[in-house]
Length: 70
Image (cartoon, rainbow, N blue to C red; front, side):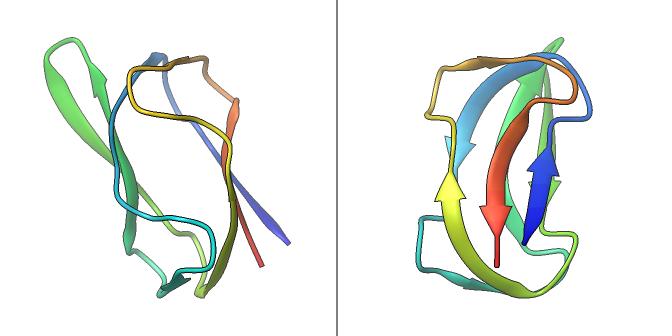
């Protein structure tokens, strides 16, 4: 089980992955927006998306768990 955490404070601009999706390492799971920049959140490992814990427009804090991979 791998937790994917936010590396910065921002808002969820777009969620690309959904539970059940197979992802490879470095696949984009979602895109955060911070200070007018789009920051992709990528999968640290290959696996299956178990949970997406945020939705579009949510504001996230640094260190917050955004997704869980199996």
